[in-house]
Length: 322
Length: 300
Image 1 (cartoon, rainbow over the protein chains, first blue to last red):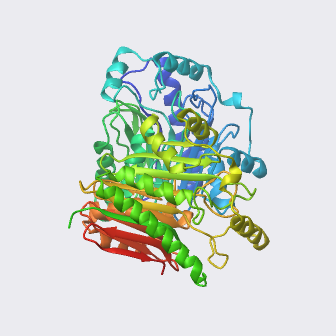
Image 2: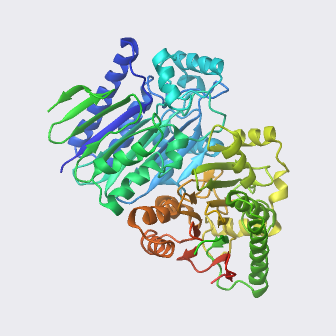
Image 3: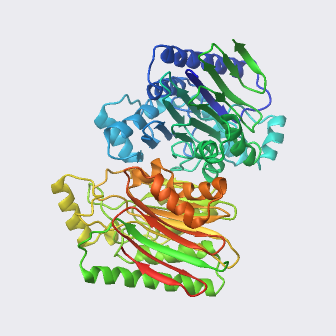
């Protein structure tokens, strides 16, 4: 029992990364985990915790959300996010954002301040202005690395999901496993607080070189994000696979209908999905954590109230404390 | 058991004082759509094509809230959305924010078949529509006098209309299992009367308004927010898959237990050729038929 938190910076990490790519992301995971732990220790509600942590992940330019979002085929950013409160099952989602600095916070406002669940594109941007959230020029979100990735994707004439670096030979092999596509980044956070409240939040820039107007799994309740009284889940990977697999909902459904443990329930949709397409983080109402993935790696971190914490990219944790 | 089955709906939540002529009109349209679907099934057309065909018919007729006859946004314009899912491989396609595409469900189908993605929206979806050469019309084409009047009422009452006392037409959908046991589902809508621009409901969300897999096909209608929160369409399939319930038990379970204070309805078919409808609203426009000759049209 007790609080627990898990967060991710995207599945779709190749088998190895040079230090200049790896180290800043490790630092980002560490920073965001610390923010989440401090919030939970100060008895912040799970819903506020996940929003806070995802805001941090969005602001961090090395993950594919908020600033640092990958670019669509026109070279612009279209961001989306969703958030869900496990206790009330209230949810909020946004898509097609181009100027909102923190998409997850706008999703939260849709949930709290409108009679709707999901606002997108011009309607969402107009709502953002009405609400006075922080906005920036669209160029604020664009990083040189992402311009580079788009360039490579166009040259290879593909929609690129492995956004972390140019396709080295090993990544090409992984990509071959996944039908010529490698995996995506997205960010997400799930938490259970000391009252047992569960919440989930997911945010992303989507797929490199995606068509304008393409919506992935991250803003879709039941696919990229889900929370109820049993667990909270945030998924990452190939959006189309996560959508068809209703991944986040299925974890909770397996716990509820088949009585599986969190770990078993989370492993199942990941195992069922085509190799190299899905990863997720999940926590249960009893303070358990699991972070399965079927890609070569997933940026992730977690901590539980008993003092355990972990930051990992591949199979073995980089840093574990007890 | 076995054989084809089809169900169609024209929305959950019906004004109990709906005039007789309107009721008859609705039943005639549902019957016509069922007949189109049945005829296609007799010609061995696959489930995925049948659901698209039937929903196109529902979109084209201005009676229900989809395509022509869609309810209006707060700005008095139409923004349509739809989704389609093919059970065998769970392929899916969805669209939102359409303003000129005559048949949204067909664009959703093209997203599924002709794009690398599953969901396209707003200007990106409209661009894709143009490139695919689908039929495009002015936004005015979709707007009916009825809906203009209803928007006025809604603004006066200052409400988003999901209240049968201000009668608003509903979403449309179709689910089919063909002779080969393949299930498919399709849903299409104009959304909520007086909705905020850019508002997306449950109809284009896979797992919420629409779902199909090896076991069944489901299309939902009603309060979008309630359907999303309960991932209603997926729920039917999940209790069949994970709890071993049959179609009727699953629909019953889901309507009874998953909606809380929300109001919604759904139609579904199973790969065994069964058909089941359920709703906790006052009425749902629906029709269903199975290969053994069973046919039923209903409102209450």
